[in-house]
Amino acid sequence: MSRSDLIRCPRRLPLVAPSILSADFARLGEECRAVLAAGGDLLHLDVMDGHFVPNLTMGPALCRSLRQALPEATLDVHLMVDDPELFIDPFADAGADSLTFHVEVVRDPDAVCALVRQRGMTAGIAVNPPTPLERVLPWLDRADLVLVMSVNPGFSGQSFMPEVLAKAEAIRTRLRPDQRLEMDGGINARTAESCRQAGCDLLVAASAIFGSADYAAAIESIRGERVAARG
Ligand code: DX5
Ligand code: ZN
Image (cartoon, rainbow, N blue to C red):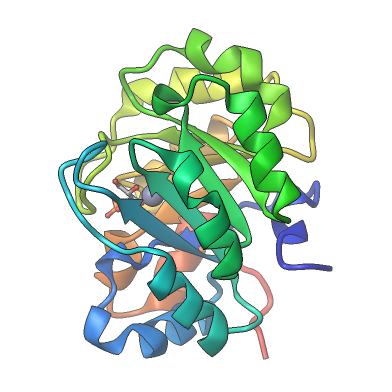
């Protein structure tokens, strides 16, 4: 199975993606190895440009370093930038496995998904809390995953917005079994349960994992199930 098959494969066991935004950046390699050993399925990289969201974080250089250090890791890149098309080639070259862009900033999501896939990555479409369902509906069948934001993006550590659950449920009913429904923002053991009930099968968490003293317990509580430990 290739790294991006993890996203495409039609199993309903929820995947957990630790977001490295809450990792200790001075010990990033070690932190990433620890969350993967603790059962994290993908590493979620939050890329922010200071325009689409009011924060600056990481770019292709960091992705490339992680790819070199962790050849087996699935790297799930979440672009919170005004012009995602500029970053398809740089992240493909840097070894990203999945690239998600926001529907709010793209005129033709179909074309962007095609470009992302041409570069060998799975394509995700993200939708912010205030953005209506109708904005994303026409493009659902084009994406490998749909990311419903459960906070206004920009920072980790914000509170989950339960009002997005209805949007997630409505999207889930329209997805094929090989498409993932990802939720991101304010996810912890408690809020993860409502996400799973809404049909989400890829759960991102930063502070609930990296802020915990026991990464494995935090990941298991978000997944809602125990899985066999990795070697
Ligand atoms: C928010 C980012 C999230 C964030 C989640 O803008 O897209 O991935 O890191 O952080 P928590 O899990 O702490 O809400
Ligand atoms: Zn994210």
